[in-house]
Length: 206
Image (cartoon, rainbow, N blue to C red; front, side, top):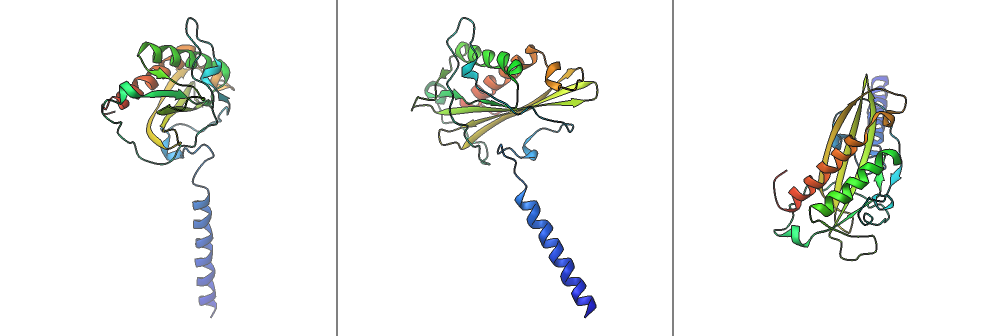
């Protein structure tokens, strides 16, 4: 009888642990830890910066703001043939990067998109075909700082169609990791985001 009771308690305990793990697998941004590139543990500056709020010298403002769309866990969906000519892209507010880092990023996104012939939309437009949303973390890594970025390309309903992700390392370690990140690094990330979007929307393999 004692052996039977012990086995019952053990099975019950394992069931409770499994249920707890299932309930905590997703974070609040809709991006799971498995979606992110490997990185050291650290803290994240959680701010939402809208590229539309950052002026671009010699250019019209970047796309307008809108409530953040929730990315789903769908796999990458190939863009339709000829989508480059018909696509209209809107940028959602950037998550995780402070204004000092987001400013050069947003300026470069807007300037390069216009240079590459991408049609930019605003939150008030009803004919946007894609929404691009970026998530950022800056993590101390010894005498370096690692910047992790994830760009989700969503449809107007908020369904994830494509993901562009990566990481950059810059020298210097500080209590505030973002203080070591130069503008050129953020501009380089913007280049990769725009080029990755163009490669996907034109039907190229990425």
